[in-house]
Amino acid sequence: MKIWKKIMALAMGTVLVFGISGCKEKEPESDEIEIEAVEEEPEEAEPEETAEVVSDLEANITWWTYPVFVQDEGQEDGAYEQTLIQEFNKKYPNIQVNVRVLDYTQGPDEIQGLIDAEGQELPDVLLDEPGRIGGYAKAGVLVNLDSMFTEEMISDIASPGLLSACKSGGDYVMYPLSGSNYVMAFNRSMIEASGAIEFMNREGACTWTTESFEQAMERLGESGYNGGMLYCSGIAGDYATRSLLTNLYDGSLMNEDGTAYTMNSEANQQALTKVKEWMEKGWFLNGSGSSGADAVASFVSGENSFCLLWSLPQALSNAQTLADNGVEVVVMPYPSADGIPSLEYILNGFCIFKSGDEKREEAARYLVDFLCNDEKAAAENVARSGAFPIRASMGDVYGGNEEALLYEALLPYSGTYYNQVEGFEEMRVYWYQMLTEILNGEYSVKDATDSFVEYANKTLEPKEEEE
Image (cartoon, rainbow, N blue to C red; front, side, top):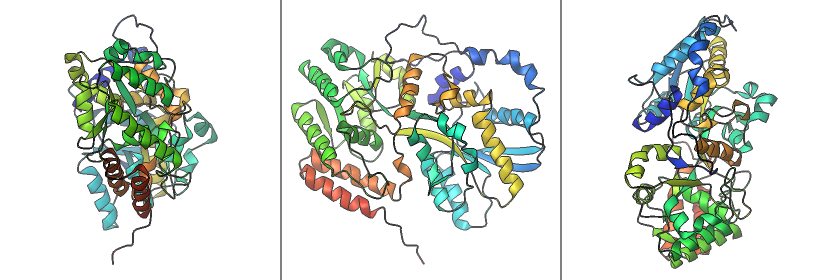
């Protein structure tokens, strides 16, 4: 939880200093961003005591969650969740909610173990991410949430891609709370000294073209600055390399219905050929022996001019090191040929496990609806998750912070969520093998991508159950 301390300050109505530069060049009046909506909360506490009862349904349910929400100073995991339950019970007084905070290391295995054992009682509600939730849906243990996705709610979601991540087999199985896109990071002093910033859009969502990206890298190279690293030693952070390559010439990782991989398409081969060309010019660094963590470390140290792997959590966890090294970050989305990227992202949301008890399942729906849609609780829940509202109507939960506004502006560019695809984890191994073969000249772009598609497509085939 240490990396979330700055977000915790925001959630508690004090200040949040991002330490990274957004798109608008307007200077804030001070470095401290006050969260007025949260500061007014004490004045609204008294009316909350008389909250109108929504339902007198009687049920006893369990809510399991990972440590997604930032806690108050000095509070243990689960303390904030308990305050949410207290507020929930003002509207649903006869629903008892028992909360448990899971460990990211052991939690997934524990839940999967309960599913595999069959007949074991699962939690009623779980806060997690689409990849794991999609796996639970395939196991047939989740409640269909279609009824919660009203026309009004669907029209309020920032991107169709975000909605697709909530589905499995055509049914909604996850109700979304917050999200955040993966982006690139540039060293401000380097892009300004080289003049590369001239080619970087600094308005709105800061979207830009592949041509502009190439011109920016050329300026950086001519000025003697190291480029960014295309790393491929291990699968960690592979989403960033996929986002770069598939966007460069408007390609895609898979076909539209998710039944085949398309990395050997003309657009993707053009992208890989171009990156190899940039590497030969020294604008990109060969990271065949380096990991995503190595790429971030090189950027944070001030060694490289840009980094493919960046997100708000990384900005926060590296804030002190960036300050010590005098590195100010300029965030940019991945470039694309048409200037309209399709971005990968983090998404937080809730699923409901089948219990066979209609009252428990209805009570679970009430809890999920409260956590995501309650007028007062939802905005703070989003802020405490360290991500951003996926619903346009929620507005700005970070008090006008310019970096936050950039991330919010990028959410409509969220693309397909591939993590739910059958065999996704196995495919990731073939991904970094393909990049290594191309970067080191072991195989041609065509041969490497054809081989990747051949083996990656095999991962899509349903696995035969062991007898």
